[in-house]
Length: 70
Image (cartoon, helix red, strand yellow):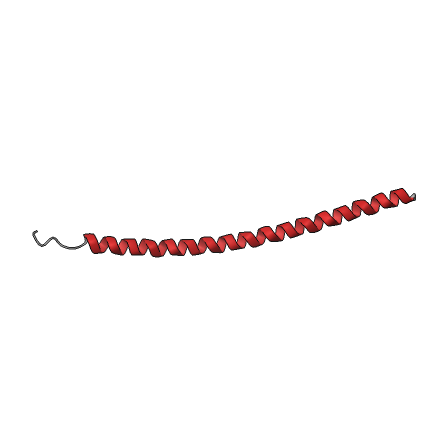
């Protein structure tokens, strides 16, 4: 085999390995961000439920009283 051919093969393998590692790193980052996002969304949903409960309690306190004139 010619030394130029060997150099080309080694270069192709090196680039392939570098791309594979870069893709694996990006995939790991995306998975990590996705997990963080899901956790943040769960916390927001919980806070919204608490807010809804507070609004409902306030509404009930304001409008569920009997009218003394009735």
